[in-house]
Amino acid sequence: MGKLNALSYLFFSIAVIAKIIESTFITSHFFYSHYLNFTLLIVIVSPFVGIILASFGKGKKTKWIAIALNGIFLFLFSPLALLNLWIINFGK
Image (cartoon, rainbow, N blue to C red):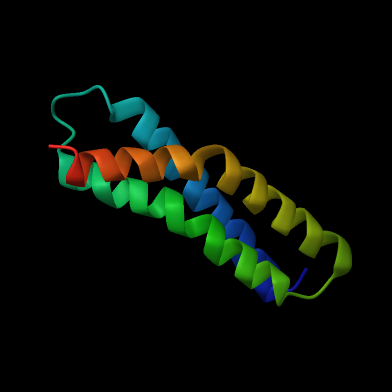
């Protein structure tokens, strides 16, 4: 596995961890909105970076697995995070 594919998997892992943190603490009153904004930005941006890094990576099988994982995460969770970020910033 090439370095770019490993970085792609790292960005996928960061996005998944950010989504878990967001899901866990979103109902808490102690989780301030600026922390939520950073978490939502990580959830939105990390799959894009992961897909770009994987597209330049070596190894055919690991490259397509990394692109697929980041793409699935992008299409499942990024629109919801983007909508939530939009409501937080412009909905009030």
